Length: 261
Image (cartoon, rainbow, N blue to C red):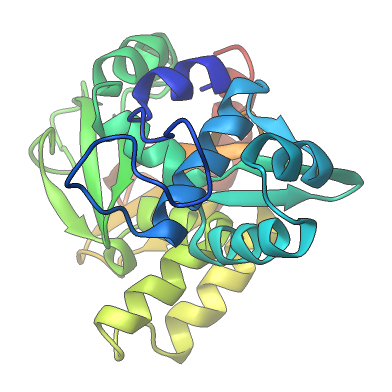
């Protein structure tokens, strides 16, 4: 999602002045929240990325104040820096909020051809999932054509982030999700899962070999937009039919498919 679309999702919180003065009588705004909202709008209006100097000037803030606010937004996942780029970009968390505000249908429509292609080539169940809080939410799925299936299509189902291959994708490529997950459930990420997250980040895709459900093997890959992971496409089937090598081969095929989306 580019900055223009995000701008349409952002509430118009910026007032005529960024000094904390309220544009409406008898309403007192919290200055730091007002300034943070203004910064997000400024970045959106620049197409999703802006430099510190421009942000400070537009928000009528000192560079130090603007930098401190951006550091906080970065830590929370609302903005991010990219290697070799001095600009601040809208982060995955704000893009996820925009998705929740009404973009699920567009995302489903955009990636449906990928799901159909992967399902046709493999005959296995293929799913589309997005992060939702500390859970995975399944937006779409295509059932297996085999008599022996992985289970019921999970459309509309929510599962813990740490409980599936698609969840591992989000934890590996959206690190702040893990921090928030640990803040809400301190025992959610044990040593084994943390090791898996590191492996996924290095390998580029996630494998679940009967961890989530006995007899079930899964593979999941990330889908990125503007450099941010916004969704995950998973494939699952009986372990007797899907060996680790089969899943690895399918992962590379799936990544080529999403490049066309």
